[in-house]
Length: 206
Image 1 (cartoon, one colour):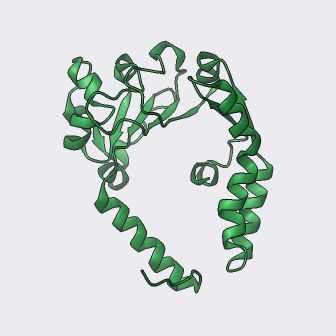
Image 2 (cartoon, rainbow, N blue to C red; image 1 turned 30 degrees about the vertical axis):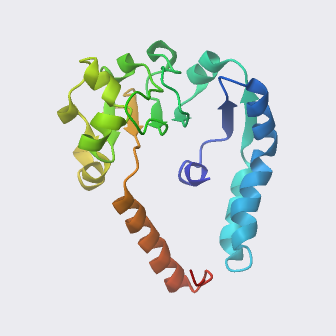
């Protein structure tokens, strides 16, 4: 839902499950309803304007379950991987120039979702270089000698320094997300502050 909100030109989402194509098709059939329930319905009572914007955005998007992963990758400009894979699911020669990839699954040593050769010539980003070098997706191209840790930009630095962003429209960019508690806390605090400013949300005792 977050990516649909920040990428308004996306009108088609392809879902693939390399292990069970029927699961991807079932998820795609329910995805619009699931996102509407999780987001639009949840906030409608406190912020009907935003709920309406979410409903409108979902009405613009078609979700499709696919069985041919290489073909789906070749058609895509934005790719998200979120699996427990230990062998690459996406090969370098499937990815078209200008594609951005968010690699979410690798969070311990031995995990891998992307072909290490994909990092050759790509612009790589992560949340924390030392951590990702050990347990993230970039551990694999580093071990293979495809890239060095100093070639990977931390996302915080990229946000502060525009020169670290995409250099040209044909560049392949990869974000390796390993997860950092400090960033989670900062995001949660921002959400809390914004909710107080707008007078929305529900306070609960834990």
